[in-house]
Length: 311
Image 1 (cartoon, one colour):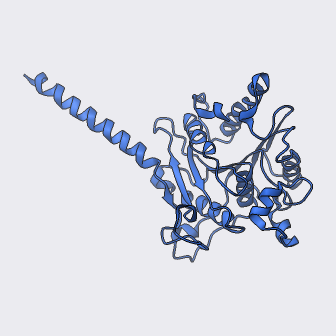
Image 2: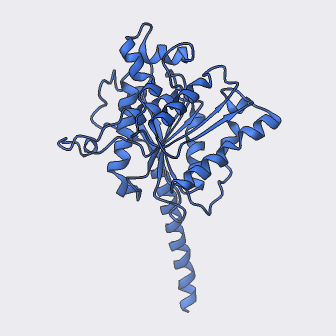
Image 3: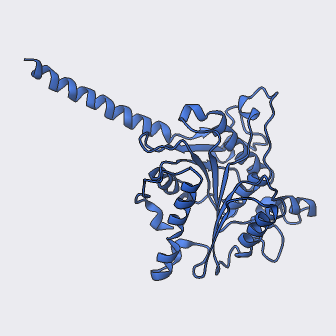
């Protein structure tokens, strides 16, 4: 008689657990407004005026407690949707939480994207316990112009304001790791990406502002360890951007950095075909190994299949 009642009870319990799991998954991917009372310098209240973080958390039995913020590219005029969720899911497969940053771009100019990136790092650090994350293992990854956003906060971070009323503003905005793919780095010709410079700084920017935003010129020993990947044949964002940043890291004595320059391929990895594509795809394995060395990723997990083949 007991078994007749046990089976329905088990099915109900399983259904509740399944529903709870789906609810948790849905909740984990709901965008978080970075400034609930309104972002500083907001030009309005439309979607483009509201910077957000969208969390994608690793499964509890895989999670390492590390997180990486994802900064999509788009020349400071839009955000490439392919640089968000697929990257986050790849990170999840090796135990790392991914947070997709929707930062403001044109018509917004400097310092707005930097403010959004700083707030993103602070938000995860201040709320780390809610997501069972380690506040000392928060990285940031940027692609193309998103690489400039990521490199800006990696060289222009601060320790936070201990007297701030907002608890998020009390903590450091320094990322613990930096990952750059085909990044915009310099604002100076001949290697600057002219479109990004124009969108971020305007037509005739002040020379001091150009220097401030050329992140290779602002690297210090406190800049976090960095992983960089770039194809030699990139005609949109010249490979010199990555080479200059890597040289600055070396000069400053930043430890444990890694640089991968591929002989084939262009700015959009997804445009490569055949053998070139297969070679370019190896950068994901290199990145996974690097994240393992820094205690971000699980050593026993192989990255799972994602939509990254679209890159």
